[in-house]
Image 1 (cartoon, rainbow, N blue to C red):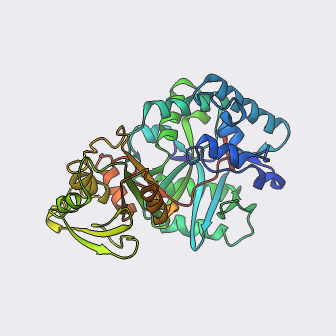
Image 2: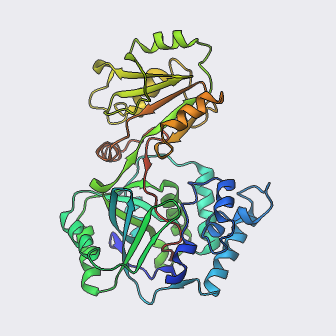
Image 3: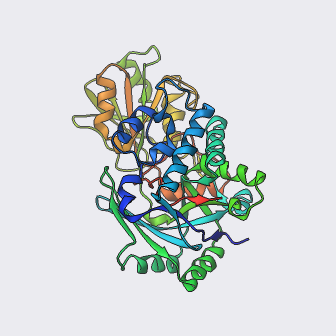
Length: 404
């Protein structure tokens, strides 16, 4: 079984691409999704977040939600809004956000390779979220949310992808968040075989975003005998083109400490300097801390950074191990309700807003986790702390789906 395989994608017809494509299901909460889908009956949010079409207080895991999503999906197919391609193809997918651009390959990726750890992970999954994706796949008999994968150094693949982008795209649309999505169909047998062969020799692929989607697809594959179920929908990007933004932390109280005592406690592990402006860390080991109306720049002492430990040396781990757990008492990032996480796409002003509003007591800005750090963690068989990476730009749901 090859590592990747072409498939006959289900795609929106050209005149409806802009109407259909939507942010990934896990980027928006229900209220945000309902607002984004208002006046947009063809938005894929009616498939990926179908609770927006039901009672406001419905449990998003209620069976009726999956039934509604399946009905919306079938209706879009029956109306000809979504059509399946005539043959198994690959697709070149380019994302452009401001000055950043990345180009990858849409493909089915082997579940067997995933189970054998050739598709390497860096996060634990949560059972409820994994179960949710299983039910969604089973209800639709399709995978509609692509897994965001990265591949290691492969210049020949990069060059081949770039050749496609020299041609006019089959799809070229800018979403309402300003991200440009372009798609090229890879239909020539020689090109298809090139990608199969070149990816086959790679030692591993890395899950960047989509741990629950990939785990769910692997579970579904166990219960289905058809070949399509033995692959999961993915977009594979070169590791050097990936963009990871900071993933910041806010805590609702100071664990009984005054601001002065907090600063004093932190000073045992960090050089603490007042800052008159918001602190956007410029390197690993540097952090910003915001208390009401006041920023500090924190630089961890080098001797506090564990050597040769790919997880403990991450900035997210350093903050947890020196400040969040021992000083603020936040020891379980997954379950402690006192902490929340703010993606870097929202900017440092969101940290200030959360604290100045009184909802949170302190905020921390971090330097983004780097792709080489992610790959080292995955290669070691370890996992990162929760909320370690925020990838931008995001793939669009509804651009290409894999049917069973």
